[in-house]
Image (cartoon, rainbow, N blue to C red; front, side, top):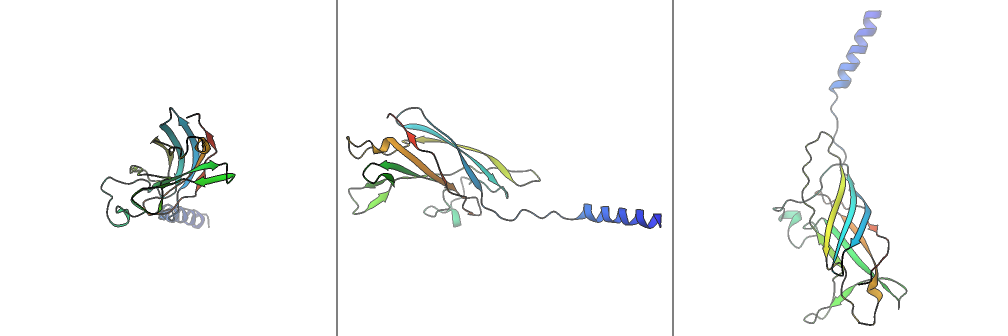
Length: 179
């Protein structure tokens, strides 16, 4: 009876150790705000944290066809929308700019960025880390010299992984600059 017990225990251990691990189910990345610092009227550094269970973050330079083609939302994998405080509306509004040669408003408040491809050679394919983005011209120019609404602003941002899973959308705190 003792031999049967040991044989069963060894057999269970062997079968358990041979079990294949399943890769994580495709899941969207999870992001969070980290920091925003300005150095002058034109330059800022934006930092956010990410976690991705399947570890497919970033784009290669040659990722420019198919779902990553120019003109598709997959060409960029990070998006950030600028909102400025409107004293007239008493709320945050998206910044739109009128271009003289066009008869419509264009959304000039979106910052687009390609996060570089992250190579992950670990057995656990999950990734977590931080992305630091240098923003030149981080806020649009004032429409009116008497309008101080662009001095109070905030961002809303999100990202996509390589499988084009959209992350959660995060809103930053409000920022005020003297510029």
